[in-house]
Length: 499
Image (cartoon, rainbow, N blue to C red; front, side, top):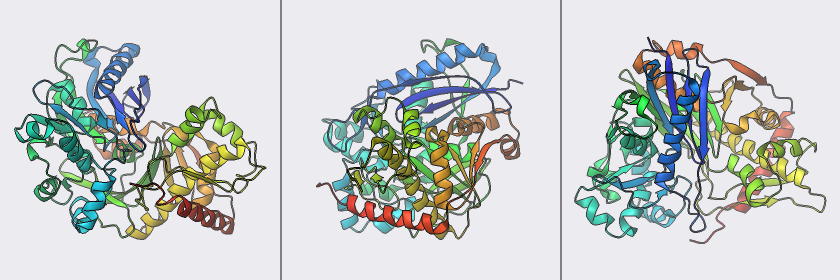
């Protein structure tokens, strides 16, 4: 029996492919970045063809580096940046415009009108979400209203919508499909009935003919078609697992029991808690989404989203020129005992949970003549941890479940300073796994469960291994004082930008 699974991890700033063996260890990988487009303040776009080019290149390169044969690959799993919206011609495959990225704030006025129209409760009750430009629905509406000819073609049934998983699967197999975890992030999906919601589509004036078929997260989505340059040896291999990146990471972290939680420190920060088979309704501005649907059973997750986390470190490097590598942020931050009273609110594209303020903007507060770039680096790292601490406090209040330990992953989780500060703020242990690529691992698990590489969820749970555990050392009163200062800083950054 073949024992290798390929995970395609299509992220906000790069496309990766990782091949895992039965033990969950990495055999080979490849990663390629692509360009970010910012046509207006608060707008974020990707070229859809850049996504395809880099992801196919990564898939071919990872396979070539592995030394494996096509017959060794049991299946392919896909995980992806979630709410990013793409619309293309179903006959030609031609995108009608650039992808509108999850971070993009252009539909804030549309959301403001929906709230004024009294739709907040309907959105929360049906989709588990809150009214915000973050989600795909208003992005689709914007494309139909603003791209010449798009509305007419959509009403004729000629245009297709997809999140990034759908775009990849369509280009790899020719099938127009998605999974419940990605569908539940569109603001068009009924998480209770597990189907597209006619009323939400009608409210946003989106033809339902554009929407993909929703399939379980573990099962066949299609097979690699013939004729894709560089992927000839992979023809016929099934894509048999798919999940949005954060739900995939929840699975990859082995959070299989209600109350277990993880945080991914990526471009943004995403904190998810497994809540089992009954979706709760948040009273604190958090989101409820489908975690995964496997073997006829649906697992739900409560989520808090931070829009800018690792991107604030990239800002120090790329826009400010204060560091030359991401690691240098850590090195400089460790040269000072604390942030010197400095707070960095990285609301570059607004604030996510629990504030949901698309008009917030980034702010650095507490600057004195003695402030150095080392203090700013430390404030950037600490700002990430403050946002996560806010989310977990509300998550515990919503669910009535106390989190014993926070499992962590993602690029910034390699920072010992950040992880220790996070443990101190939470007054809870932080558990970092040996394999921090848990997003890709979760997608691999879903594919491998379908393909028979792993038998059941117990097999998956047994593969997680801890690399390091961070215990809190800060006094609780100090943590409370620091959080109070953070909340003052957030208030200064809120409701800043004009429409």
